[in-house]
Amino acid sequence: MPVDGEVPWSKAPHTEAKHKIFRAYLARWYPILLSENGYPSVTYAEGFAGPGVYKDGSPGSPVIAIQALLGTPELANTKKTTRFVFVDNDPRCVKILGEQLRANFPVRPRPLDLMPVSVVEGTCAEAFEPALEAVGAWHQPILAVFDSWGNAPVPYRLIRRLAQNPSSEVVVTFMPQHFTRFVSTLGGEVDAVFGHDSSWREVADIQDGSKKKGFLLGKYRKMLKEAGFQFLLDFELVTKKGESLYLIFGTNHRRGLEKMKQSVWEVDAQYGIGFRDPKDEFGEALFDLDDPQLAPLERMLVERLSSRESVRVETLREFSLFSTVYREQHVIPALVQLRERNSISCDRPRIERAAMVKLL
Ligand SMILES: C[S@@+](CC[C@H](N)C(=O)[O-])C[C@H]1O[C@@H](n2cnc3c(N)ncnc32)[C@H](O)[C@@H]1O
Image (tube, rainbow, N blue to C red):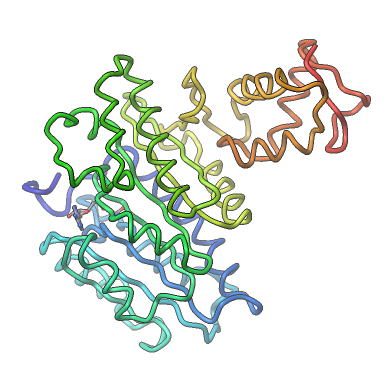
């Protein structure tokens, strides 16, 4: 892998799943934001864009993002503006990305003024904000993807500005391992990743590996909340070898959260990838939506019910949406299983949204 490694590089096992999630989310994001009643323009921007291609010839995320737009039938004739901004600090990546964009889209798919594409060499910290400025992206929705090697060197000020920009969202790749491994050698500038809060360094006092990960993710989530993102979704992509990568999504729109969840749950075991809710203390893999593993959700529901008398099913659906990686639709099947095991009771014969449930 770069810094010194070759460009392009071989695709890591998580990458296929990550791209599938991006594709699925973008197929929803563009038509919602650019609908008739939506915004006049949007910007898709990457702070760590990569070369746009992998060693096996498969496309990188910048190419995928443009393909997703062109593959959206609702927008075939749109007159709205779609901007693309790609920043990378490795000159080799910048050069290859330019070549890849030309090779994948030999004929300009949309007029220049309706689809400016900007490829910029520089660090995310220094070049991203000016690059957005240069294409006039601010004050219109921005989907900012920060897919670094997991160290997320993104200034807090930038995250805050994005959180305050209309209908803007972030997707961040986060590798807790990076911080745990180098906690004693990483300088003060890394505190900026956590919103200039050095308390992430307390991770050095935690012994248990999975608690360390949970602690750091908690710190990162806290930073995103303080920056202004109301709804967060973080999940762990896990390969069969047990290597993991976290994606953290921040939005201020319930619909964004719902659509990202829907996209995540579409990733199936096809690529040998599972995913986990980092907040589930048992760290159980979730796999496949057709046959979702509901045990982690059942545990979380039982915990949620233990502090209340009776709770409305709709309240548990909201809990699931906002506080777990599960979708609202998973709650009733989980409650049905809990009732079959006599763990809960329900005031109606059928467990439905308006019903009340209670721990037995
Ligand atoms: C994980 S790769 C991106 C992969 C790409 N998003 C994809 O899915 O095809 C990370 C990229 O970040 C670049 N990079 C590393 N540190 C950077 C920094 N501080 N600013 C900008 N780019 C950086 C690397 O050159 C590399 O191309």
